Structures are given as structure tokens and as C-alpha cells.
Length: 436
Image 1: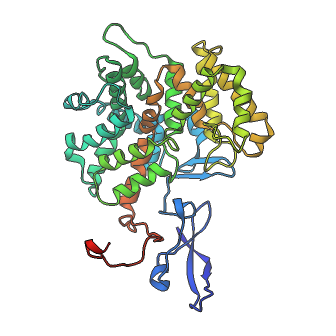
Image 2: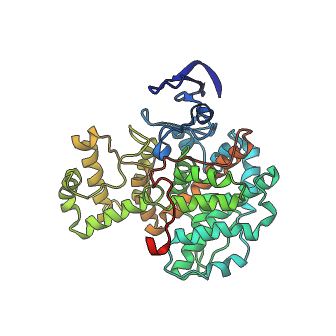
């Protein structure tokens, strides 16, 4: 962050003297006006619901240009990372700022592999949940509980503790997600296998049973790895901001990540791909592909409450770059599994075709987003809809940790304390009970 020659002057119509505010420039993206001294100089705060025009931090991790449809991890375009690197390389990049060479990658992957098991007591903790509990409810509890089992790495101000916690979280998240799934279907938990890749090991823990050998399908393995890479980080979104805000209090890394998991559960955030599949299933139940046109007309009707899930994005005003990559993976998976004629997938393709060709959706840039395609891929693989957000949390863990560590290392970081515009009652006195 460097001070710009440009300055902002805030003038007032009430006779208050103008205030000059410094302007800072990043390497790319909009400049920012520094308002830290505004309250002290004017007695006023800024008002920005949702923080849509407020930079809450300086960060060197992820950059999004919504107008161009561009996503960069540490400067690298997501298109290059998703096609030329795997998730372990992406994790290394987010955590340490560089893509590893062959030996560094092998050492990092080995370190992750040897931390994939979880304490056996976690099984007993898991059994306290109902079998039909939502996986995200279970995940919120399990991730937070890690601090009770691994309390030798809970000092967020200790760099060594943060490093150990980072590896543990990245390594154990697939195990926890798979355990939540196995518990819900009444199958025995499968232990990690160190000879498998990160994605391959996750698939094994999810779908293997003790009855027979499980062979990882390389097409599915690549698809899962790409899902992880595409969801690894996404700048200062709601869950990442939650992790930063939670961590700013000095709480342990496991608790901060658990807060991110809880935030991600919301249907407007990580739950969007789950909502997308539910929408498709509802259309299918109401008549299937013959009802697509009628459904899209309801979406266009401003008096209707029908929403089109999986299309458009709050940040991307152009095509979501992750969606293009996920679309390729979607087609590969459906072909490999022979599911091109599956009714639900044909229904999804019909929706996609209308959204890409109808002027109503094109003019509003309501293109399919990454949630639309990743939901289809996960359903094809056999992952239940309720677990979709759990997969998202697994993938986003690397980004959350990178963001948390960056914040703790920032000499300017302080505990988060947003302000408010108070609209309640002015000061008043309590009347005696008989006079109220």
C-alpha cells in the first residue's frame, strides 16, 4: 500500500472546516480513501451497509475484478492454476505466497498427508449428533472442537502454532467431512490412506467401505481437485471477513475457522449450490424439462417470488471465470459416468441454454456461476446435496487460514469494531411501575 499524490477533500454544508483525507493505492484495483481519522476530526462515521464500498484490510492474497471477470490468487489467474496446478500447489501458494517447486511440493503434500487422521475421541463427539443432523451443523461443531483436541497449537499470536494449526486444518477437513457423511448414512468411518492424493484420499474416505477395495476414478479425482482449487479463496467475502473478525479478538485458529464454516452455511453464500440443486429438483418434480420455459417466465415476472439459483454473482458483473472451468469439468464427469441423459442434468442444460440465449438474462448478465456447475458435478459423483456446503468449507479452509495469518502478521491489525447509525429511542428515564 503506497500513499497516492492524490488526496480527497471532504467538505460540509454546515460550516465545518473541510477535512483532507489521504488516498492510498494498491498494485491493482481501486484506490482507497483513508478515513481512520475522520471521527476524531469531524465526530462523524461513514455509513456503508454490508461494507460494499469499504476496504476492511490490506491484502496480498486474492484479487477480483468483477467487471473483467478476473480472479487472481497471488497474481496468478485462476484459469492457469486450475489447469496447470493441483490443490496442494494452490494451498502452498495461498499460505506462503509462491508456487512450490517439485521438492517443496512433495514436502508440503507429505506434511499434510501425515496429519489427516483425527483423534479417536472425535468419533465419540460425533456420535452425540442425530443421524439426520445437517452436515454443516456437525462441521461447525467438529471444527470448533479441534481446539479441544489439539490445544498445543491454539495461540494465534505464536507463528509456530499458526503454522501447525494451518497444516492440521487443511489435512483434517476432508476427514471431518467424510466422517460427517459416513455417520449420516450409518457406514463405518474410513481411515485416510497416505498413498493417495489429497482429492483421491477424500473420495476414498467418502465412498470406500471395509467390504471391498475402492479404486479412485481419475476423472472424478481431477474434478474434486478442481472444485477445491476453484473454491480455495475469494477475497473478502462474508465467511472470510467473519474469520478475520473472529480472529481479530485473538481467539484460536480452530475457533476462527469454525466461525467461517458457520457463516458459509448461509444460502446466500456457501449454500448457493445446495439451493441450486433443490431448485432443479423442484422443477423436475413439477413436470421436468417441459416446465423449464414456464419456470423461466416466472423468474422474469417481477411480481413472482420465484428466484433463479446458480445464475449471476454479487461480484462478477461479467461471466464468473470459475464457471467456465467448472463447465468443462461438468461435461467430463457426466460423460465419464454416462449420465448425459439423466433427467435432472438434461433439465440443467435446458436452463443453461435459455440463460445464455434469452435477452432478459443476457442483458442482466445472469450467467451460470460456479455454484450451478459444481452442484451438478457433486450430485453426479454421488455427494448428497446437504454435503455440498461442507465440500465448499473444506476447499475454502486454505484461503481462510491464509487470510487469518496475513491479518495477524499485519502491524496495523486491531480487533474489529464496526460502528453504527443509531435509529432507536433517544435517552429517556424509567418511570415507576405504576406509572407506565
